[in-house]
Amino acid sequence: MRKSKKLVIAVKCDHCKTETESFVCDAQGLRFCRIQTPGYPPDKDCQAEHTRNKNVQKKEKNKGLFSQKEISF
Image (cartoon, rainbow, N blue to C red; front, side, top):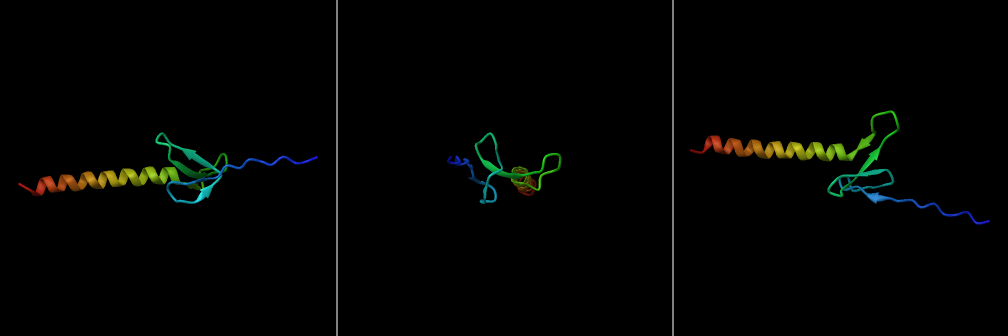
């Protein structure tokens, strides 16, 4: 008898640009790596890094706008 082939889905991570089989999607449809052993914190979590970087960039942008307003008269 023939052995049936297993379907393996591998997607490209939108943050680190590597192909992975374990991934998560967010509300915008972006796909991120998430390598984790159940019961332990993730070894690699690109979604958390992406969100953290996005928030830092937003704060820096707001900080820059406030400093410009304070300096100019």
